[in-house]
Image (cartoon, rainbow, N blue to C red; front, top):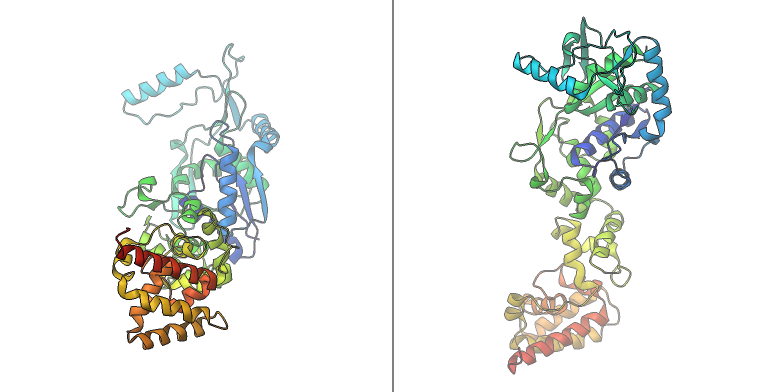
Length: 471
């Protein structure tokens, strides 16, 4: 049975690279019918925070990446790490190192002077003497000195490391707390992880972890190291490139489906296909399709995908995400047009949910001012008569639906001897404050009769005040 895991360190938000790793691990487990584990690697007690843990859980939840086991927290497993540590010490596979910081600094300085790679020289590897007074020892793993470690990477192919190049890794600090590489090994062993999919910044950790696993007579997982994500300029991804965290994409108005589709294409392909539902990803994802080279983000691709999903997903589903953005504007979405209807009306003309919420704001609350350019062109003296007729015709409508609204506007235009646009556009500016909205009949249906009539009256007052110089 295949079993994967996502194991972030909670030192900040769930960044886009971590989210892609989570997605790839999740998809691999789902495709092969195995469990997916969430593990929080919080042994860095100084930098790990509850807020960062919540940010990871929130990001996973928003993306819809559900986990079958966990979340497990490394800080709750210290007793287990100590137990395995003692086992390695007992079996002579680890040892206490009594080097002081000053001694290690002097060693490194001497190695640099000789133009050697700075590394621990194993001076306490076979130390049999008494504990050094005044020195709290660290515990080091006794790495094999000969032979090689072959990482059979599922993305890059075989990567060979010489054991002679790997020094004896610290697996417990002087205060007794276990280190990252050691905790990872114990966790992967105990949790039965069969496949580790992670960023290629971990490649150099892998041979060390394999050697510890072998020392524990544990099964070695298969590894797949995913190349990093770069900015559009080809440089390492950073905040200056825009959104760095998953929840920032939520805040900017992207749907999780668009972000997932965007992420899966950052480093993986299936023919020329660009659009994948989550079910399709789960069915098709494989590590053979992953790129060996880094991938660069492409903001315009994400916008394109988001527009696609705004238009094609179930409007009720999109509306649930839109509700959050409407709420961010201080609007109660219950006090106005149904959000599902808003999605249907605005999807074609919106790139993001944030943009959609801003555009639909006039349906729920009064706007303070008319757009200056739109008002100066449309709310003028010649518009007063058609707007009066519209007010009268719309007041008389027996039912408030798009079709009869359209017929009423069309009839006023014919009776006024004007093209439809010359009537509809002043009406649009009157009710929305701007020159842009969905088709006028749909706009008015969403706005409702009372608000429509009140805003026509407001526009008539504006026109009359302009004529008497009150603006």
